[in-house]
Image (cartoon, rainbow, N blue to C red; front, side):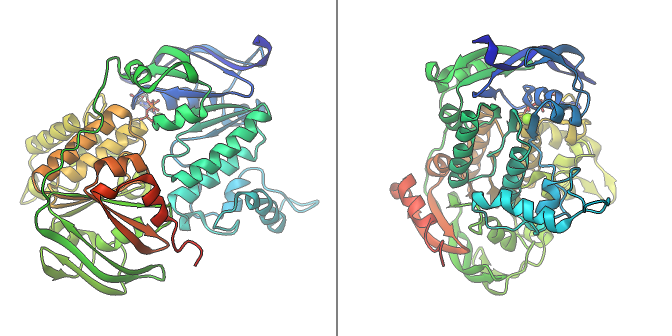
Length: 500
Ligand SMILES: Nc1ncnc2c1ncn2[C@@H]1O[C@H](COP(=O)(O)OP(=O)(O)OP(=O)(O)O)[C@@H](O)[C@H]1O
Ligand SMILES: [Mg+2]
């Protein structure tokens, strides 16, 4: 048995200023297995992976690969040892093409010269991409791709190294079911080829489906390892949070009241066509669809980020033209965007700055900032969202991925909106924090706030929504009332128009 152990990480310790991220964590990976790492936001998963990938060095402990102690001080060392990592934060270069990103640092050169052979590079990239049936080209700029497409590029890039150890830190956080299935097919092929895979995800159902073993860490400590067919969700969650957690979905349904938002025959760009729907106060309106269906694009139009070509928008029965997000905010609309890194966060600024930036009006009197109020708002939303941070002054870029997401959600809640648009609100947050976000949404609709929730996790849409609008290919293909919400029905509408 022991001969097929690919990797051992023994007694790893890592301290950041003010944070002991890993205390004494050990982890083992066999050839041909998918070994999941599970833990709450901030538990230390990404830190462990960054140590393996040569991004951080550990303070203590050793890494053993194929029975030999390995020194991994930089990213190239990891690659030399056959380790390929997909990091949680996408690290593609936006102004480069897909092919340039895939071959970054190992570009093919023209024979006898140091010039990059772009023709060959694009050809090679096409060869790698072709089997995946993707809707973008090697020559497309990464900045023009959706988050899900970028995630696919990361995955394919990692696969292209022919690694023996493949690490995926939340590879599916913005993928829809179809893409996840596709990824899992590829993972199963890699398993057959004896590659060892470390897999991090907060989607429990996924872990149960793909993982052979699951190791849980909590607050930087090793808690235990289970084989996935001998454990269950409840046991794993109890290991993660250190207690039993019941009722993750706490939605209570009331009576949605008057119309607060109505969109009539909206067209935008060349993609969004003839969109009509309405939203009531006191309801959660789910938006389902495959990735690329146009849901985020639509919300950006409503929020004034992108222009519309024709159509009408009514807020509380008054026709409005929303030219920019500031106007949207003044009308009581808030948008928590999908991509926290590029659209939302100021990583080099403090937790306090990031939380209060949109509600500044509330406490700026003249030009003097009311610091005590600023602190009070920060405290309220750090507590409400359970943001794990050593202080309000911590730079947001240093929080764990899930805690960054909680900061963005807190910021928009602090504006006390009437209409709240959530684009994948629970992406990357752990089960406990998910329950927090659901219960906050529940409280908000009870107070009469109207919520739009885009989500690619069907159980989440079904459990949380009063009604669900389904989009496909830039159009609305269905609107389902609560009693009709099933995965099959949603998928039926989500796959219409796909081949037009
Ligand atoms: N560069 C850094 N500087 C300071 N603290 C850091 C840094 N990177 C991580 N930390 C802290 O180390 C702890 C572990 O973070 P890590 O990113 O490993 O968590 P995680 O398990 O990946 O969480 P998530 O599920 O939210 O992604 C957190 O408290 C985090 O704030
Ligand atoms: Mg992480």
